[in-house]
Image (cartoon, rainbow, N blue to C red; front, top):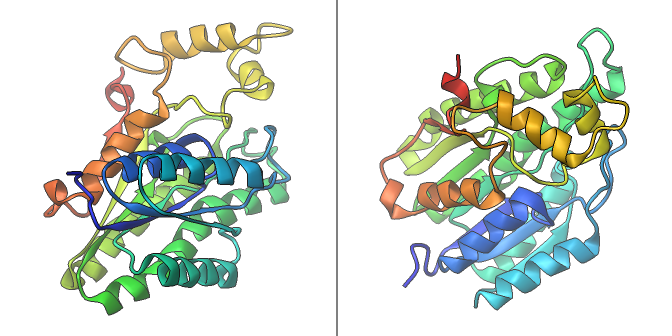
Length: 278
């Protein structure tokens, strides 16, 4: 038996990276999954976007774990598209119990050099998109009347500041506040809401040349290994450069499960000690 047998979980940004990992781990613990992704590149990002094929591969992993998958291409900036994806997913899978607002982007520049487009896309996806995911799902959770778990993927940048990431840090701080407020508003409905705060996680979002150059500006052509060395020496208390997606997914499973049935309103770091580093 799994920790989430007979449950249905929704994951945004599910086509790859952390989102795919969350979807797979939830399925491994017995949940059917509504997997949503934009399946396209966002203009202000430096890495390649997810694809419809990526989303379908996530579905195959879910089904390989013995669970049902419902997939939808939807942009978290588009509330109507999200509402349709949620409604269609519930119609297909029967209910909803867990919401994982994971979809997000990353870009960087000093705050005085950020373009308006960079700022707007970051806030629209990483903050407003989280609220829109909640707006599309919370009415269903309330109507079911059986409680539920909402898990917002923030960042260590939702609890402290970092240079060159002002728009990202602002959005992730907003996510932290959203979780804390939602836990108060929704507690009477037995709906829990928590945020998770990872340090760097090795996905396509950070594993690319622009990020290498950001961390190693002293090199003309920094490599993945140079990036690893910089992260290992400067990021965390534990001697690792970054986390793997499954490290975050295991926390997602715990917060979704009855093992955390009385846990709400917390900001949970999964950070290898990054927040306590001096």
